[in-house]
Every structure is written in C-alpha cells, then in structure tokens.
Image (cartoon, rainbow, N blue to C red):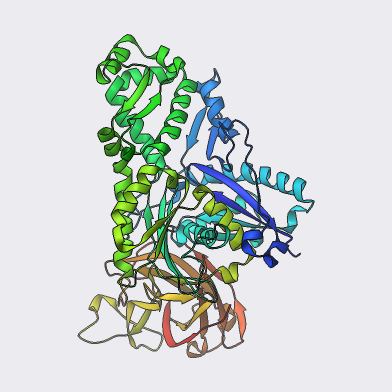
Length: 581
C-alpha cells in the first residue's frame, strides 16, 4: 500500500515530539510545505512541540503514566513511595562508547534501557497514531514513520533503536531511521531558508545541542542534495547535565545536601517548580548583560527548608533567602562545565575539515536557545566561520525529519564513513610476516592466515547513497553447511588483522550454504553484498552456483566473542560496484 502520510518522531533525551505531512507536500516548494505537529501535551507548563521523555512505573515495573503527567503525578501523588520515576534513559542504549571518537563518553546506567525505550515509544506511538488518523482521515497503514537517532550512535545502537520501535508497534517495513544533525541540516536548508546553507557549493556545520546529547558534523550542498564533509562527533553534553550541576553544585552549596533531600522528600512538586524556574532562567542567562542569574524559590519549597538551611542560604546571598542568586562568575563556571566540551568538539571538527572550512555554523536544538552558549560559541569560532541560529532551533530535528521522510533517497546523497568496515577472513599465509599463531590449513591443506581484515570501505571515505561492495567467499573446511562471518570496524584506514588495536567486532552474519553441500568445496562460492551510504547498513548474500539468494542474519547487538579460532570463510576474488539511488 502506498504511503499517504510521512510522520517523524524526534525521540530525545529530555523531550519527544512528532510531526507529519501528506506525501503530496513533496511536490511543493520546501518552505511552503504544510507540516503539522502537536503542542498541547497534558500537564505541560507551556505550549511546546515536545512532551517529556519520562515514565512513571508502578510496583510491578509497568508504566502507569508518561510524559509531563508522569512527572506531575510523581511529584503530587501521596503514594509516591510505590512508584518509580525514570527519565533520561535514551542514552543508556549507548554501550561502551568508543574512546577513539571525541566526546562520545556517555555512561550507561542499567540493563533496563531497552525496556524503558520500548515502553515509552509504545505509549507515544499509540497517541501519535490516534491524533494523526483523527486529523488526516487516513488509515494507520498509510503512514510511513521516521525515527531520529543521534549521530554518535553506531550500528549496534541503531539496531537496538529499530528493535525497540518495532516492539513498540511501529511496523518495521514502514520505519526509517534518520540521523539528527542530518535532518537538522535539512530544516536549516529548506524550512528556515538560511543563507549559506541552500546554494550549490555552500559548506556548513551543524551543531545540534539537545537536552541530552550534542551531535556535530558538516555538509556541502550539491546539485543532487547534501553530502557529508564533516566527521561525526558528539556526546553527553546537553542541557540536562547543566540541570544536574545546578542541583548538585549550586543548590547543595547553598543549603546542604541533607536539607535539600529533606525538602525534596517533603514536597516533590515544589522541587519540580524550582526546576521549571531554573529552565526559564538558564536560557536567558547572558553574562554580557551584567546581570546575575536569579531563580525564584517558590513558597512551598521555602517552607520545607529547615531553619538552618534558610540561614545558610541567606549567609551565602547577602541576606536573601527567597531566591537562588548566582553571580556571573559562579554562573559562568557552572555553565562552562557543559559548554566547554561543546566548544572543544567544534574546534576539533573545524581542524579535521581542514583549510576549506565552512561558511556557516548552524546552532540548533533546545540548548541552542541558551544565550551563554551562543556567545561562547561565537567567541570561540572567531573569524573562522559565522554562527547562525535559526528562529526556532528546537524545532530543527523534528521538522527536518519530515522533510527527510518525504524524500530519503535524495535528501542526503553522501555520507562519510566513521570506520573502516570489514570481515574477518582467511587469506594466504605470508611467511615471515603473518604470526604463526594465525596459521591454519584450509580444505585444500593450503596454509592460510586467519583473522585477516577484509575491508569493504575505509574510515573517512565519503560514500554515495546505495554504494555496494561485493565479496565472494568459500567455506574454510569441507562439509560446512553455513559460513559464519564476523563484521569488524576499525579507526585505521588499512588494518591487516581484526585483532589490532582499534578494531572492534560489531556484528556477525550467517550465510546458509547447505544447498551446495553436494558440490566440491572449491565450487561452493557465496557472494556477500553490503550496501553503505544510508543510515543503516544492509547485507544480502547469494549462492553464485545457483544464482539464488540465501538466508543471511546480521546481529549488531550481541556482545560478540573475540575467540580467535572462529574463521568460517576464506576469501576469493574482490569486486566493487556503485549503484545509483
């Protein structure tokens, strides 16, 4: 069935929203497209396109409320001791961040991450479907969905996200994944119509500063679409971490940890009001204006502070005990714990792009509204580029994802590979060069070197959409019914062995070769085709003898063994082909 509507879900650490458009909008000039969204969430403090990414779990661990309502009920329900409030669980999917990639160190908290992501998406998806169907008149099966993911996520996290989405009820055959800074770039180019990001030859960087993550990369406008020229980087440097520092640093310093905990336990709703007041104050903080950062202390929270805490607060603030006052020096120090890593990532990106540079740096995301972040980034960039902030930076990923879903094959036409991708295989043993530990004899009793890295694409290579790489393999031993292939990545351009430093096993696939068991092993050739250039790697295989597709399973999620004895295949010839999307 053809799609009549494309719907995007911007699944964020702090907030999640959806937007949609009829597919007929593709024929209209991008800035004139009718894109619909929802901004009247139950329990929200003010109209906004995102609901809070939060769940309230009952005693058995099942969700009893979600979004703003989860937070409100947790802070007001007298039975809060039986509930568990969880938020910021999106980034828990990022396991073992790669130390070789700048800024991707984000702590993983619990093994509950996939359950929480699935549970939240299920509730959110049901709500979105009901609203879109009611407002559009289409049926659910006519909707194509697009789900956003951070640029720092690898194949493992993308596969996890897809699995969570499908378990939540989003049909896998009607689901696209979109990279957050990519779709933000489309928003800046199409919806916001910013100069320096719309004409052929324009080069620009996107700094997507959200609630939980910051993603950075750069693009060039071509006649066919956008081509990635930057090097994806980012990490847990979003505004949520600034919120945590406000409590753990500024508040604890003024009233003490025990008093703060007591006030929180006495009235969690009052504490939530404090964080809402902080949210408004932090975005408007501008040390250049010469004003202190002032956060009102609501009466409910004030009453729950004991006398010692109020006295300590007054001493710290020249007698004022009904507001939290941060002078410029303290506020800057607090902000820069989160802002400085962002500036370092921008510096690194500009250095890696080289002398050609970029004409514009586009700052988007919810944290982009921070005046202090804007000022510090403008100062750090200096004359190297021009900082531009679109009128609605927090909308960029969500609305850009709708533009992407309308034309995914032409929106981003080239992506830079973050890694060298390859397969562990066995090649001819080279005396004096290959380790003796890797020597094994294949079905012909020829000496082979196991653990060789058979590269498909190289790190840093700009890959066209639909770029195919083909490899042919034979069973290593007589009588093999399956060929097991381990997929590796490396930060090096030409790794020789999959055991080298910087190589990581990221997946494995199993090729069913049982149909050719009656043939001599030398004739049992299978071809593996890996397609790059999209947001997800696709893999297929076929038996060259029968020219029939064979079953392939690819697993990027399992914690794969590093057993050096698992070889499974011997390489034959190599061919490569480009396919136009």
